[in-house]
Length: 107
Image 1 (cartoon, rainbow, N blue to C red):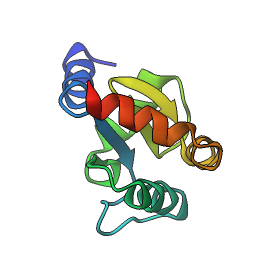
Image 2 (image 1 turned 120 degrees about the horizontal axis):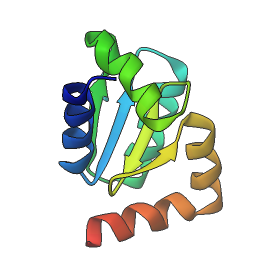
Image 3 (image 1 turned 180 degrees about the vertical axis):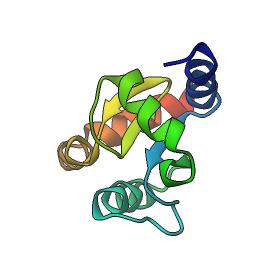
Image 4 (image 1 turned 90 degrees about the horizontal axis):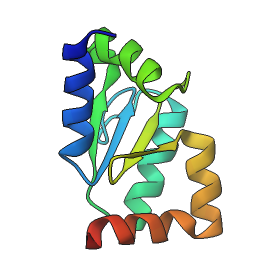
């Protein structure tokens, strides 16, 4: 990964309390896993940003290297990598995701 790409990714993650690197956008998810994450965050009613990796192949590959996570979507809360769709579902069902976003938004 180039230093410029790493800086772009870090700047995006650092600029938002909650950001999702996904296929499509929150208004038009382009895969079921991305849609799962959008639906969960919408149910929680929290503000979040999305990055459409389909629009930027460099980000699409770079974010996988950055997080050491092979799949999309990827969720970051308060600058920390949380996981993908399956992890989001588990955290949501256990109530942990709600706590994580509340702490992030309060900080």
